[in-house]
Image 1 (cartoon, rainbow, N blue to C red):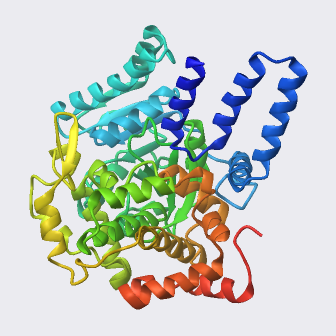
Image 2 (image 1 turned 135 degrees about the vertical axis):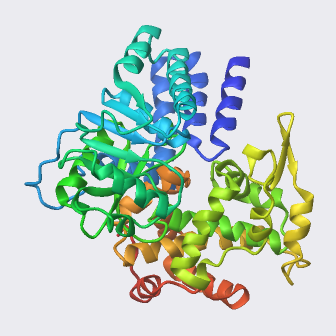
Length: 484
């Protein structure tokens, strides 16, 4: 029927063919529509029995259990720790992230005071918050009255620190410059009560370094929201050496109250998500330098199951933002995180910032996009391998296995508590395909020995950045896997 055809067409468009269950459900409805109920149920059971034994089903079931276990997650090992009650919040910085965080707090009933240095920035922030509320009204999640009440009751603004004397938490979301952040926190600590938690929304800068200017470092923590805040479900909770368990538990509880999934990580360059994601993006750029087409690289990643190709994602995030994080990682990890050379050209071009400047790896105009040929031409001039032919599987392995390798290093270093949290963070924070179960679940399904062999092959061609992590080699030797 036409209805069935359109339903399947829409499902294929959404799932890109990676999820067989929705199509099987539609086929079962179509089959059973004109049949007796017992025949329809038998057919449904038959289809279910085929699906339930597939790797996709097992991966998604495992993810469900991961999410269920996170409901009890407190971020601390001591059950006697009681989190602080957070009723009043402050946000420093009314840009895209600051406005998004203010909206998230106000939407869940937390009275929030938004600060920026000038009223014009505050006006833009309020407009952004209002836009998100209007979207909720449009999709009927809120009535216009409910949206107005939440907005007017819970959001206030200031261009100084007035009203910060009774805050329970203040979240900073300003420019990614550690010296500026340190100055702001030094001023802020004098304006808030002793019990107030201070949090930075930094995506890569050191929490320990920022805390050196504070007299109460036990109240300081990282709270990295992902953009856009109203859609992205993950919050990385970054713990400094002096952060107290009470502060950790309080911020984890607050994140859950905002309907976010919190994952506690150690302070290191890039933390967890960016530390694993940036090598993937960087490797995609190095593939461009080696002569692989921009469209091909994005197509290969999307075919694997990523929601967006790495070069399209880099444009969406902003090439200037990505470059800053990449340089933090290069400074922290050296040669294996060496930033692709063409990035130097990109950052020198003030018009080449990605979608926001209408030019990045793609040129955006009139709702369409085309490859930025001059940028590609510059990129390939940096590589002696740009005239070679590359298999799709080689390009995919370069991008994905570098993520696997860095994930294993994070696990070995205790950046994150366990493999379950790591995989959940990568799915929620980067869009790593849920049907693959996460980065480490993918490693298990591919086979640890095979991955070690493949990484060694890549290292022999492309260099030390593909050298297998010690824990990966150990697992291969011992026949171990992450999920068994």
